[in-house]
Length: 310
Length: 249
Image 1 (cartoon, chains in turn purple, blue):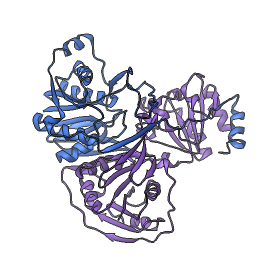
Image 2 (cartoon, helix red, strand yellow):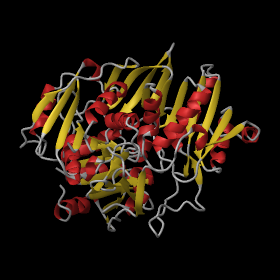
Image 3 (cartoon, chains in turn blue, green):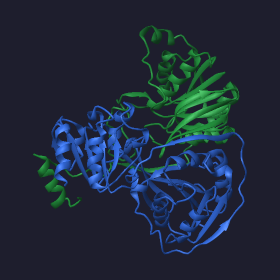
Image 4 (tube, rainbow over the protein chains, first blue to last red):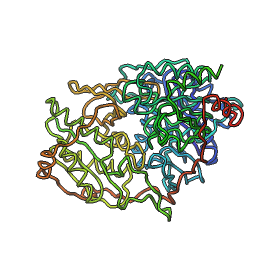
């Protein structure tokens, strides 16, 4: 019993973030168990059992876990963690919410958002918005680790045949409850796993102008992102934000439109394979990380780009 | 209701940090330091709760060196009533911070603790959640809106898929996200007034907390640099390069 991975899911589907976390755990070595905690999660458990390299799946099923409330989920993870050396989760908002609560209940100092596994007890993690990389060694009896998914390839979703075991939970703590969710609906790929991302910044000037980027995105099969400035200005919802405190993306192609390139934004996209910057200010810091820069008025360049992609 | 607001002194968000040549950490000597931007938002929210008659007192607390007094004075100038400095040298990890804050809570008995969701130096995003665990209180993290009710609170959280609203019992721990509010600037008269507001100094040992780091930092290094790019002359040249050179479209 070496690695316990807390699955990221929506009660019906196992999310790709879990597959990236499996690869991180494999780098540390040892057997892998996936824990699926939620409400009505049998389909998720079946998917988890098929992931290559997974030897066991445990499920904890109950209405009190349906919305991943940290007060209810954390004690379950503490109980499941008994006997494991490492407990892993992808650094999604759900796990970022829950895992430190788990760590403190176990009196463990968590290791957040690792980008590399150096050895079984030593990990790399970015600090200062990715402007420095810390190599940290843990002497904790159990390590609580969250994983930056863009730094690890996904494990194969098929090929495994792990046994699934159902375990009783710890009940409803009775101090928190779910009220409602406002989920952004989109037909486009998910920002953190898209092959191409087209992002807009303050230079877009309005939310309506994001329609221009969406047309380009649709031609490239891309997700649409944004800088903090564009989100703060209300052009697009919060879940579009790429950066130190938003989402971290590392697509094959990242197209930054009207984004100046603050340190905090670069932190969320500078590991992209190819970066394109379109900005009318040739002094904009975004050009320092761009592979291809185009100094131009975006209101001319973006429609031209869309036309060129036909 | 008393509101407790922990604040951290960090390298200013506009500073491009440099890694020390011996890879022991980042250069913090002669670098501009400020209040962690997320903590400014939590101070602002606490002050607004007081102005709205929903809070009676705003107490700010910082854990760090004597220089963290500057950060506390800044919070007092924004409108906090009273400050506590818990002196500790070197890096204090989130778990130790949460343990000290639990001790402060035992003395101060706040009805609400408002923290920034993460500090922009170590980017851990842990302290609020850990404090929730240690106190047994519910947590509302990454919030962009809070509404106090009778013995409970509704909080809107920024999550990967959009927004989520939860209800938590009070007392509670809240970690704030960027869009909760826009923090005010301290006016000059308020900066002068802040110098006379009470600031107590304590030590980590007063709360029986050992702040020795659990994790050993072996080294701090520069991230890999990106190779220099090129400026293209037109959209068609850009598309040509992406197709034939980078081969990504």
